[in-house]
Image 1: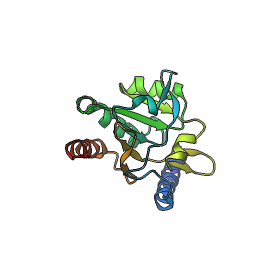
Image 2: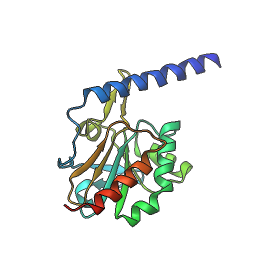
Image 3: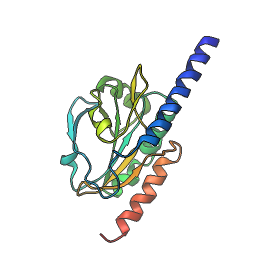
Length: 182
């Protein structure tokens, strides 16, 4: 039992170090005003979803490390809790991690998630959004979010995310952006 605790502590430490490194490297992540890199990934239902097909809607594109972990579950629950408010604002939520469709399907079923989780198993989308963390023995998506407007332009990039408060922060920024001209 003690070895499991040590393993978990080391794993959490490695993720923390990798997140700090990812935040320091920066530079490639699409910034406010940039066109969001297009992609097509399969969702938990096995069907492909393309960013360009979502033109006309606001998109909350959030990257997260791993299904079934505490921070990722909290973040997903908060997005699910606020889903109706996003829908009222013509916004959809897309979660992206490097895990496969089957894992996402199990996570959605267990946690009651009704938005799409996308499987970036080839690491291409996480890389194009500068949201890939290489731990040496494994690669994970970093906890980053991009708020994309109906024309496909990044309006806000969140590279330092607090999973507990993030959905409320994105909702507030979305409301402000929708009220401002241009």
